[in-house]
Image 1 (tube, helix red, strand yellow):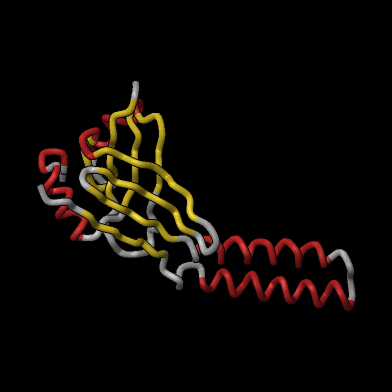
Image 2: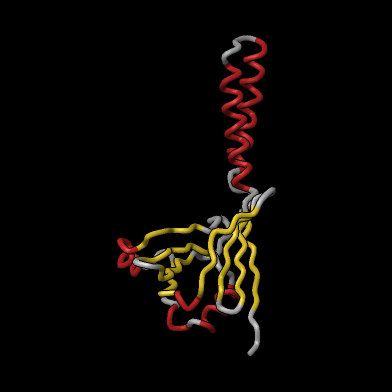
Length: 163
C-alpha cells in the first residue's frame, strides 16, 4: 500500500484590507497629533485606531494548513507567532463534501453541532463544506482545496463528493 501525503497552505491575500489598514493607521497618527497638540482626549481615539490597525494586519497574516496523510485531514491555523490545531478529521467519517453554494447544505442545517471555518475567502479558490459524522450530529468544515487535494478526495472518497 502506498502512503498518501499532501500539504496545502492557504494564505490570505495581503492586499485584502490594505486600504482599510492604511486608513486606520492614518487615523491613529492624526488623532495622536491632535491629542498631543490641541485636545488630549483625542489620544483615546488614536489608541482605538491603533488597536484596529493591529487587528486588521493580524488577520492578513493568518494562513491555514491542510495536511492529508493516509485518510486523515489535519487543519491548522498559523499566525505569524503561533499555530493552533483546528481539527483532525478521518475521511471514513466524511458524510459528504459539496460547494458552499450547494442547496443540499440546507438539509444538514439543524444537525450541525460545530462549524470550523478554515478559509481566507481571498484566494479565488472555490470554497467547499465538508460534513463529518460526530456523536449525535455533524462537524461542518469549510475549506479551500486546490486541485491536487481535490484529486486525492475524489480518489479516496469519490461517492462523497457532491456537486
